[in-house]
Length: 296
Image (cartoon, rainbow, N blue to C red):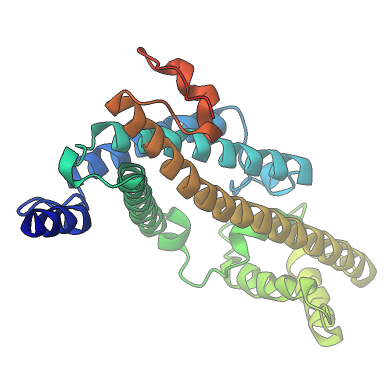
């Protein structure tokens, strides 16, 4: 009797020898991660197609309103809930349950939830790696990078302002303005700082504009002052949108982790034909053979 009791306690604590109930089943994890990635790609592509995006280099998208940025961030969170929920459910549903003698109350839910969380982590890492590769490839093949090695970082953001700054009714053909645009862009980027564009930089920019465009000094000064103000507005809007998008990405990723865990638990319950926990009881109707919920 004593030997039998010790063996039973050992089974309850450590599981059966040769197959631990806590082993991660990577086939289920990969299936969930791939399902989450595919669903996320579909939803993000749809969002970009209908205009829910604030990361374009176009001047019209650069000047997008705060409402559009917030709506884009909200859609990003919604698609993360759907995608990671779908992937977590697949991971939990395809995970093999532990052997009956090795089960501990609530252990199946924890195992299924961990599989969903692992699928979420793998999907995030794969998405980040793919995004980094696509970004590196786009930068390497960019015609702006290959044609102008001395181009400043302000060119993609303030290209419209630089066009207006050096606009002239008549200009000699084959005039190379790359160096002048790069230097002017670096000056305009300081417009969003606390001190703004310094007096010396402003005077130098007025001289450059007057020399290149042929404008009179007062007209060149008015143009420079107007475009410094426009550049400050454009930089502030781009910074605001970037903050909103960054916060939305972080929130969507963290919420996706919780959703993946819960969906994996639901998938495991459906796999075993058991009722869902009380906090997700409303989803039990989706199971093809629902069981009656226990009465407390």
